[in-house]
Length: 229
Image (cartoon, rainbow, N blue to C red):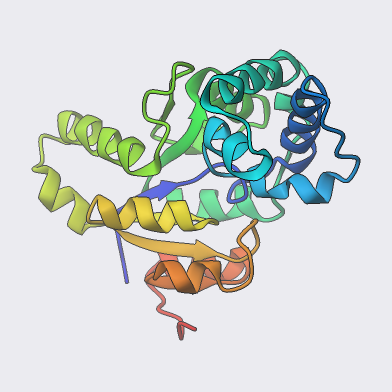
C-alpha cells in the first residue's frame, strides 16, 4: 500500500482529547441533572457526533440533545479545547510522511472553529496541506460528508478527477465511523489501535489495514505493507 493522499482523523488519531471532551460532556450532563463522576465512562463520546451521542448514551430527545451540545460548547470553547495532548510520535510521523512527498489532509467531524484552534495551538498545522471539519450547525457532522468535501477541494486544487484521487488516497482513524465513512466514500481505511476504538471495533467495521502503534502507521503509509490482523 503506497498512497499519495493521506486523510487524517484528529481526535484519538493525532491528539488525545479525552480530558477536554469527557469533562465537557460531564458539564453538559450536569445541566440535565445527570451525574457521571467517572470520566472513563464518557470515552464513548470521543468520535461520534455529539448530538447523536447524547441521545444514544444518555437517552436525551433530539431537542435536549442539541441543548446539551450548546452546554458542552460553553466549556469546550475556551477550556476543553486545550485539554488535549498530541499523541506521542505523531509529529515525527507527519514530518516523515511530508519528507516522502505525501499530501496530508485533516478530515475531522470536529467543528472547524475548534479544529483550527487545536492544530494551530499544538503546531500540527505546519504538517497539513489543508483541513476540513464540520460546522457548528451540524453540516458535515458525519465522516463520509467530511471526506467528500476533502475530495471536492482536492480536485479543485489539483485539477484531477475525484475518482482518480480517491484511488490514490487512504483515511486514517481510530473509530468505526472513520472506517465506515471512508468506505461510504469509496476510500480505503487504516484503523489505529492507539485511539479509542473498543476491542474488535475496527475489525468489525472492516478496516483495510489495522496498526497498533505510531511507528507501524508510519511504515504502512510509507508503503511498507504489514501483516494485517
